[in-house]
Every structure is written in C-alpha cells, then in structure tokens.
Length: 283
Ligand SMILES: Nc1ncnc2c1ncn2[C@@H]1O[C@H](COP(=O)(O)OP(=O)(O)OP(=O)(O)O)[C@@H](O)[C@H]1O
Ligand SMILES: O=P(O)(O)OC[C@H]1O[C@H](OP(=O)(O)OP(=O)(O)O)[C@H](O)[C@@H]1O
Ligand SMILES: [Mg+2]
Image (cartoon, rainbow, N blue to C red; front, top):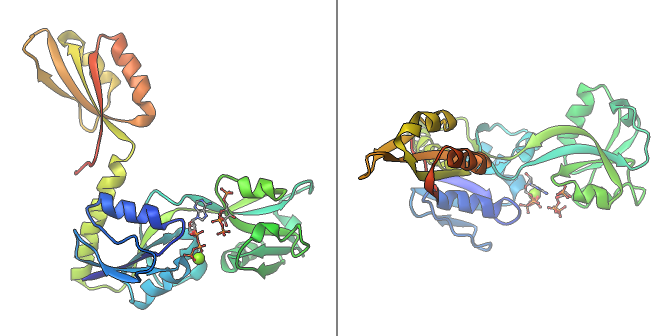
C-alpha cells in the first residue's frame, strides 16, 4: 500500500485534503492524528511539517508527498516532482527597503540578506556571482531590515501585502512555486501503478476545475455559427428537439470566457441557457 505525506496543518493542509476529497479519497483533516488510513483509495496518510516532507519521501518513510515546490528546491533531497497541483501558488523574491535606489542584482554585493530559504538564495547568488551574507532566520523575515538585522530579505510573496506593510519593495523573483506531488525515485512497479491511478484522478479534477457545462436551445440553422463560437472538448453535442426547427446544444467552457460566450450565443438566438457546475472530466 502507498504512503503519502501531507502537511498536518498550515496553508497547504486544507487544499490538499480537499483535492484528495474531490478525487474520492477521504483523509482525516485532524491536526492531532499523525497517521491514518484513507478511505476510497488504498493509502496510508502521514501528517508532517512541510519542511520534513521532502526528506520523508527521499528516505522512503513515505512513497509520495504533497508539498510546495519551494520546500523541494530548498531541501535538495532525492525526489521526483511528478505533477503540479494548482494550489499554494507563491513566489520566492528578494526585497529591499522602500526608497533604495536599486540598480539591479549587483546591489546585493556585500549585503546581509535575511531568509528562511538559505539554500535557494545561496544558489541564486552563486549563479549571479554575488558575494552576500545569507542570514538564516526561521520566520518573520520581513521585519529583519526594520530592526537592523539585515539589509534586505528573501522570502515567500503572494499578494505582496506583507512586503508593503513592512516598507519593502520586491526587486527580483527567484522562483515561482506551487504545491506539487513528489515521489521517491526508486519505487517498485506496483507502487508506480498505484501512483499512476492517483495522478489520473488528480489530473481529471484539475482539468475540470473552472469548467462549466452549458446547455441551451438554439435555432437549427444557427448550429454552425454556434460551433464556431464554441471550441469544446471535441465539438459541441447537438441533440434534436420535438420542435424540428430547434436543437439542444451542450458544451463545456471555461468560466473565464463563460459570459463572453453566453453573450455571443444570445446574439445568434440561443435561449433557455443553463449553466451547470462540472464535477469531473474523465478522458
Ligand atoms: N502567502 C502565501 N500564499 C500562498 N502560498 C503560500 C503562502 N505562504 C506559504 N505558501 C506555501 O505554503 C507552504 C506552507 O506554508 P506554511 O505557512 O503553512 O508553512 P510553515 O509555517 O512552514 O508550516 P509547517 O508548520 O508545516 O512547517 C509554503 O511552503 C509555500 O509553498
Ligand atoms: O505576499 P503575502 O500574501 O503577504 O504573503 C506572504 C507571507 O505569507 C507567508 O507568511 P504567513 O502568513 O504564512 O506567516 P508565517 O510567516 O508565520 O509563516 C510568507 O512567509 C510571507 O510572510
Ligand atoms: Mg515549515
């Protein structure tokens, strides 16, 4: 049976548990339980601090894990990144106090930079031939310049709100991150088959997110025009109605373009348009 390591609490826990739930796998969301068996898929679930997940997977304590790409790159453990999971999006950036006249990355030469990601930062400075002092701290990195502990910081940025609150200005994005599925690189065939099944479920879920199922009635002579407006998964489904001059048209569209498509369809005579949530796309 496969063992998966997930974050026990914190920012990735909820999205991880809900991705698994959407894939028909119920893991306990309890913060106290450290290991449990999932329902809906043969899986042991190990609840860990996110920092420990890459190592647990590299050691084989867990076969797979869900963790931010930032932690995978920081820990430099021997694990394969198998797929991106579409949540936990953030970036690791260098930021300097507002008001600094920033000429480019060479500004960091000789400076003290506070971070919880010393490995990624040192690699970046080495690649850019910068000699700087990397000052590792566990948290509240953004206050370091204000209290005189550092000249700049390197930390996670998402909305940018924390930087603004602390009078800092983002200057260099070093990596973009999101939650990923990682795996031990030396698993047997049976475990790989199980991982394949799990990834198939996750991919179906991710593909269907943001998609809507659209049904409408349309004058028959407008079908070709509607098909041109609606590049669906293959082509729209067209079903006859009792009234032979009309058809029922079904199509899957992304919510980003939903209203734009609806407006165009109405213009060519579509009526009784229904928009339904789409749970899953199995290809
Ligand atoms: N503001 C944010 N927006 C989006 N994603 C974030 C943000 N902050 C962190 N993340 C992502 O979520 C992951 C977990 O963040 P969290 O703050 O829960 O970590 P932590 O405090 O180190 O947790 P743990 O107790 O498990 O060690 C980060 O490694 C990163 O990938
Ligand atoms: O750009 P923003 O949207 O403001 O997010 C960035 C902040 O989020 C994270 O901290 P978190 O809130 O998880 O607190 P922590 O430092 O205690 O982990 C991260 O360490 C940044 O400080
Ligand atoms: Mg952590």
